[in-house]
Length: 554
Image 1 (tube, rainbow, N blue to C red):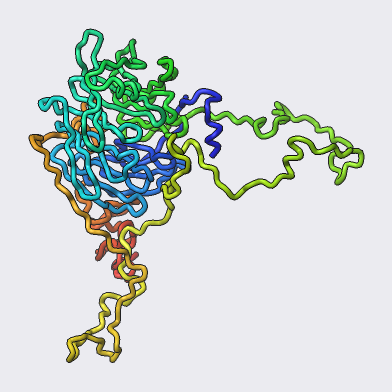
Image 2 (cartoon, helix red, strand yellow):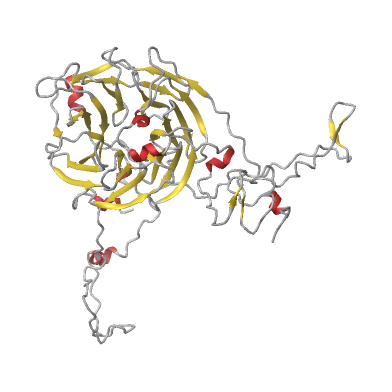
């Protein structure tokens, strides 16, 4: 709404904290969809929580993995979501249904994955201690991308803005530009410090608009380059960065960097504390530092695609940073006046007359004459902020919002058909067909209405990579210094079996209540033995309680 009014009338970066999003579980990573309407958050217990960012409410929870989710990426149309967990598994999810379409198992932990910006059939995966892998989803095949030095396999990779090229960087500062379709080397250069020493590449990020990209390196400097200049220089070129961004005072190392939605600003999250540094790309000056809670460590940062809003994660909570909105009522009525105190209103003589007898009708000219023209209210103009520079129309099949509906986690099978214990006896006939003993000509089929649809069989493809160690541990599981994250163990809590573990809300027993091992809570007034367990996930009334089989009621 009113995205056309967000252009450069003032600063376009957040200034203050605007609340938090509590995902029940500990949040580890987050990413916006292409329009910024949905925010996917990967959690420590393997869940993916999808937030409706306009209402700031949970739209869907997908029980995706058993181990912590370490990376997420939306498809271009928003219908698919690809996730990676610390147990080396990459999964493809249907956002509407919550079903897993495909699953891939890698020999080493996944540091990052990225959907192709245009092709919904390709996913770029960066395994630990391995060359990047380009997955093709339709045939479950993979291509290992070429690297500069086979002995140095600490490689990061990223698609450019339209997915035509893949940029890879290794620990020796070498950047390779590969053609996505042919994997041929198109251009290359080396990132060097002032004394021609090389520095390791930590991450590569591209802007949503324009041809700029940034490189976060181990020497604590963020370098901004122009992608067109890189391609022009060709192999072994020596391009100069447009900007070099760093914290000269504290020499802060950067955990996560990204561009703003319009590509005019760059935000970098500190690896030492919960602090966000915002620079203006064109000038290179630091415009804002956003400080979170002291003592927390930053895990991830994401900038909203079209608005000056930043989401950051620390201590398992998603923090939202936005601008301070000041109400300006004169924007609705130019002659509106704000009053400090009540003023007696003086009524004009002809103000409430049905027809002003003294008023003379002026001739309709200019804007008044245009009011009589017919206004087109049926055609829809595309929103410029949602279209790329090479597109004229929006993607009308895109998934912008999720329908909010109550999800029954363990529905009763066949609620409209006959009960399962009242099965009709069938007797084989002479011709080999079976029919009911009641003389019906047709075999009674249970009603299929309301029955849960059968889920598609999920296939797991094992990706074999040569020379990759299989005993590596994901960096998320070995983070030092974050005492809060050490207290909570990764994965789901032990002892929860069945589908009850997916139900996030658990009622707490009241004082004096006894909690029985099978999960049934009985108050102090209900003494005796309770038989039976939960009927469904989250159901607090057991079958035995429904049948009044509880003995010893006071």
